Amino acid sequence: MRDVAVFPGRGARGQRNYHAGLSAEEQVARSYERDGHRVRSRRWKGHAGEIDLVLEKAGEIVFVEVKASSTHARAAESLTQRQIGRLLRSAEDYIGRLPRGALTPMRFDVALVDGSGRLDILHNALCA
Image (cartoon, rainbow, N blue to C red; front, side, top):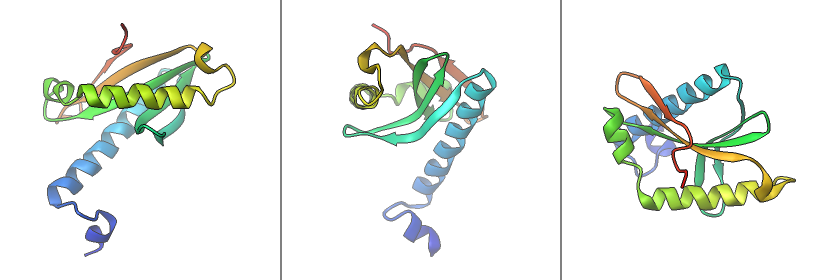
């Protein structure tokens, strides 16, 4: 019964997906940390939405959207234009709170985690 209170409105599948997402985010964060990044925030919430991971290395801010699914292709396909728009607006909100504002070096990565736990990071995935 405790799970129902923790996850109101979520069935067993929703709970599994929630925990799989948390696990994927942790795996991605550890990968970035091994590469010298510092985690600034996890699941940062702005006015427009949530950013899974906000990291920093050598003064560059890295916004990461984590997608987990049975395959990397399915994970990539689950990233919608609407989510990308929310991510960009949330990042604008985040970066606006920093001393250098929009002059802060930044990039947007997408991290794909498949059902076997294999990780594929698409660096600068949302570049123009």
